[in-house]
Length: 90
Image (cartoon, rainbow, N blue to C red; front, side, top):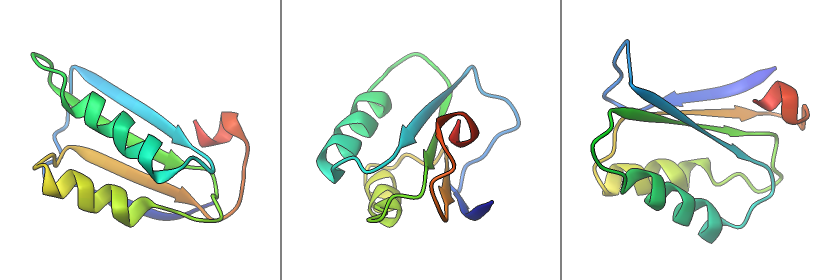
């Protein structure tokens, strides 16, 4: 069901918080604003998990490029080849 999974270079076994961002057909600007807002949080050890539910225009490489550019390496990105629905995407 998952056709692609990409992880950042700094993966730990335990985080205080995992922030899950579900994506389906959102504009790139909204996705990057959401990521910037999450990354800007202080005083918490967290990872970001992005799961794309088969968007026709996947922006996952741009998300990876953005996080690498700002130096955030605690992430996982999951891309579903086709729309599987919110519950399974979650």
